[in-house]
View 1 (cartoon, one colour):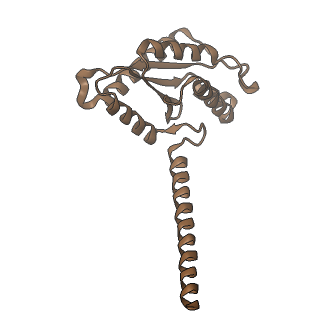
View 2 (tube, one colour):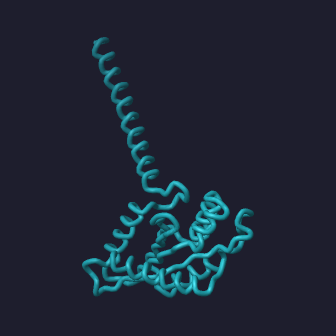
View 3 (spheres, one colour):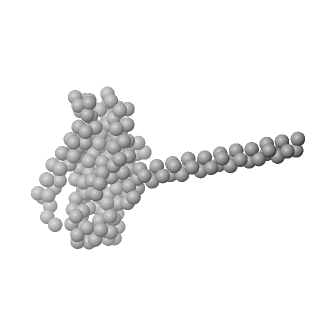
Length: 196
């Protein structure tokens, strides 16, 4: 009887230990996924996980045009990196990203596509609403700057797109291409009127 009780107690202790180990592994796995999904510099979604998020949102909103994206490219980052150093360039990236993070609601995401290019996803926002939000961020990006950016003009070029339902089969690619093209048109106009 006593031996059976000890054996049962050992099984319970072993079971509790196994449950604790499994929970620790799950938590570690969740933490690793979170780290893997984030851009190291800015803390926002990286390209891989960000595009997965966009794809999910497109699938959820198949018949709804109230999903808008905005492709963003920071102006003059190469100039800043070359003349003030990469630390200041990184600060410029974080400054602009932080302005987006302050304004965006939890459903909206900003994604680092690479280097100085970003994609903002606006579920349940029209093109006009996104235009107003992005223009507000553009206007505010030269305010409340860190000291290292005080003598540097901070801005970005952008292009906005929403679903074109005639491209049902490749809706995501169509939206990305449209937003990217509009962003490059904006950047071309910006370069024509701006001199460093």
